[in-house]
Length: 193
Image: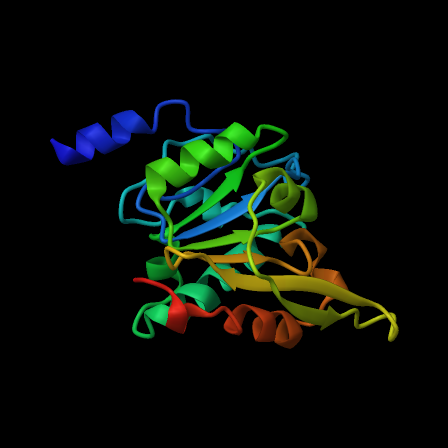
């Protein structure tokens, strides 16, 4: 009964948004998908409940989903050291809000995630949230003077909010170890479970 009720609340789930209704980690982006492969059709599927969404395993040629899986594993691994990628993806949603800030409000009410990571500047700006940001920087491996800024913060209710220094689709503009350093800096010790 509870499962059916929760799935019913997910009516109108946004396109290009694979994930779990019980998301602990919510990744938010405004960027339209550029990761689609012309030979392999993307299938819209309803959200899952407690299991990885198959959309996370779409074999895109840009490596976007590979990065999303890795980021989820790093972040969830900070809280649950025993699990792997499948465990991490079973509590993760990637929400494509486009230019509709109402989608984020809807998703926050539905999922009540404990960690929210905005993947691009417009997603963060459109959220209209105010937090005390702790900046973090990731250097560009090709341009020594260029750095990208992200941040982490914790809200009064213990939700961890972050803005990534770079979008996963631009993984050629950062080194894995630099991005992992940013992800591992998430202040989960102050967050509520």
